[in-house]
Length: 90
Image (cartoon, rainbow, N blue to C red; front, side, top):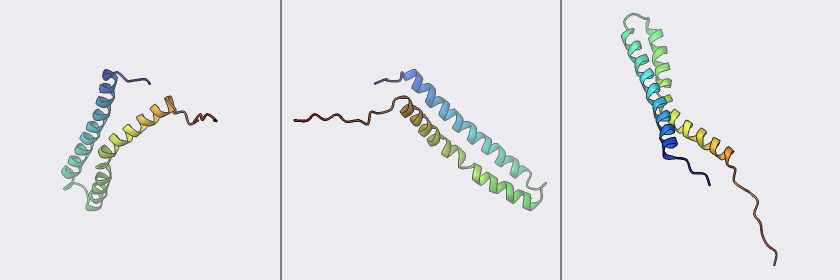
């Protein structure tokens, strides 16, 4: 069985958390821009932008589990389990 080094694991965790933080930051900036432009834009545009923000709000929460699942699938493809079972006849 191949074990991953702790440095490699730390790098993968850092990358996954970094992507999550970047998505949260982008979502926050977009929301603040919508709030700032609330008085300038028409109401229907603001309502549509708030709807987009509501959808974008779930991306950071979804990205971390998706990245974990993708990395697990890559690992399973790289090291497939043997499905054959050998039995001996008496």
